[in-house]
Image (cartoon, rainbow, N blue to C red; front, side):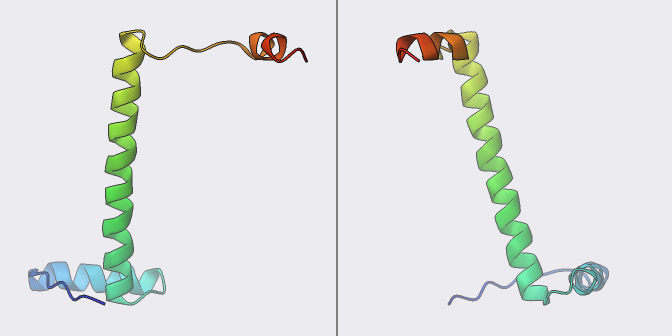
Length: 74
């Protein structure tokens, strides 16, 4: 496993420690999960932006559930 160092002010350090304790986590686990959650949010946002761009350019084609059933002879 790798180690990443982060420089913070004393106030930031205490704030991070308080939040980690509140969630019953170590500082390391709290920071790791928070950073990973943020990255996942950014990836999701990029996917939404791509979808919206394609939707406005009519790249994405959607059909109704009834049309799907009809195509599958259901």
